[in-house]
Image 1 (cartoon, rainbow, N blue to C red):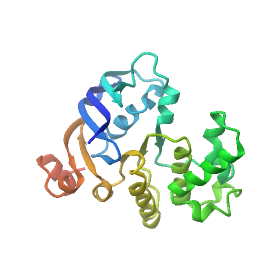
Image 2: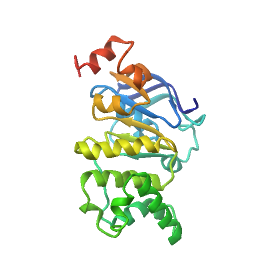
Image 3: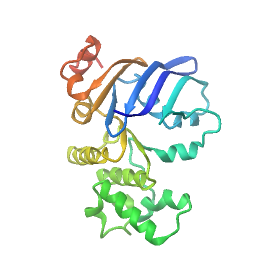
Image 4: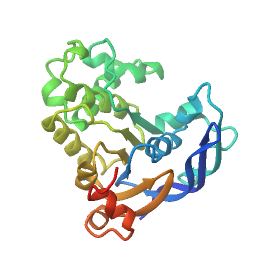
Length: 253
């Protein structure tokens, strides 16, 4: 299998405290890689290292050591175009952030910011992105309605569509279903299973149960350290580390 990201000896510190400690990990292309563990285990920090969102942290002293390679190139090397990196590696957050615009304008927003003005190109990408996010059938006759009228689950899938419109290679998702009902959660999870054929997906789940449902590869983090990594089908049934077993069986966390 081909590694999309290769993380080598990555340590990240906030105000002198290790959030990540010496992480070495390959994230494979066209899989759903799940980062799971208790609070403050480093999951979201690691996710944000993959498209340099940690660069935006203000009023805190941060330090990073190690390498993060995307297709073999160090994303922290001098001269890297961070804007282009974040287009290639898109992010979807826990709370759906629909813009106070129409459904169509939400999906077009990033494209127009990038300079796309061709009506036929915009229309094609809106439809393509909404289809991939399993939202086209709901929205094809409602494209000019305010996005803020949509349900929470629809808004989250709209945020996924907005990310997909920029044609990324990797999708990062940080607790994307934490505020959704079970039916909406199931729809988002089903969308991810289809999307991995075209994208590499890295997900911080909202529960161990979700991690077990969707993970092709599962990564267990504890206290900023990588404890165990393996196929999801094996790690959640036959973990090799006692700490992993204790966590997934609810003995702590």
